[in-house]
Image 1 (cartoon, rainbow, N blue to C red):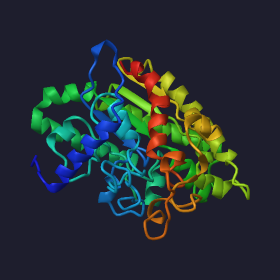
Image 2 (image 1 turned 30 degrees about the horizontal axis):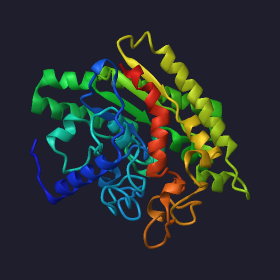
Image 3 (image 1 turned 45 degrees about the vertical axis):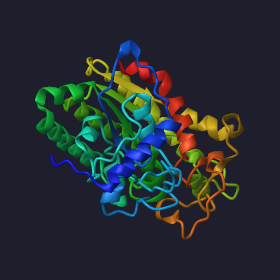
Image 4 (image 1 turned 30 degrees about the vertical axis):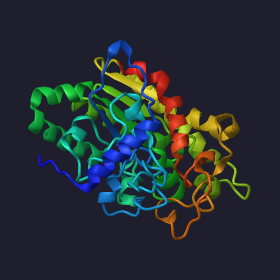
Length: 360
């Protein structure tokens, strides 16, 4: 593998230092455990820039995205004003402060050895979701992981590669786009599936993915459930009527899927007896923030910071057509679909901190 040095690397290192000064939030791991790498699969909540390198409209490598990243005004392809969930989780496990995108051509060997994100904004469990968005499907993310394993093996040998793969933590964060976009906004799945049968389909895709990931050597796996998706600003606008109330339809679908995900993970314990499978609840933490924002230090819970905050996301949240709120730290949402860095930090603590011990 050719190791590259470039001005981008210097900028990336500077951003890492600045972020370290503000977010030193690693959690003490049990029994002096260490985690060699964090490997992440999923959608825009954990995409740290893979969509920059594919042909899709689901991009955010432009301002105002990244306005608070590192030293400021550094759009990296993260769907936020700063860090995203994958970065913060990497910090929680004491791996590193920034989790790079696997497709980043500037990756160094140490980046690979300590983990990457394969996630792609706009994707889902359902293969149709990734096709509709022209983004990286979950199966393609798994193929990239296979490629990743081979790269590591070439650099450090098979024995160390196997150690890294087995001792690393794996996070899967996906599913919201299946409900909010593919099912709610297009007719393709509604013609053949009601919500119970569609969530069954999503659960079967999740089960198959977990089995494949296990077969590739993963032994510490956390799966983040669907969030309180009906209360993100875009879904209020599209499904909440004139008053922009939360869309109960999407929230109920998320709850139903989560119950099926918990069941399949619990029932897989015997099949994966040498594996730690950890369900991570994001539904209730986001619900608590949205229902009582002032308790958590926020003023605005029903609109994003970008533009009107009702619908702007991705290419529609840009410096030419959208005004930006004066203080993003008072908003739960950055755009109409994704949390701010401040909300991500709080949500990550609520979702992860009490569950870290379950990975060991």
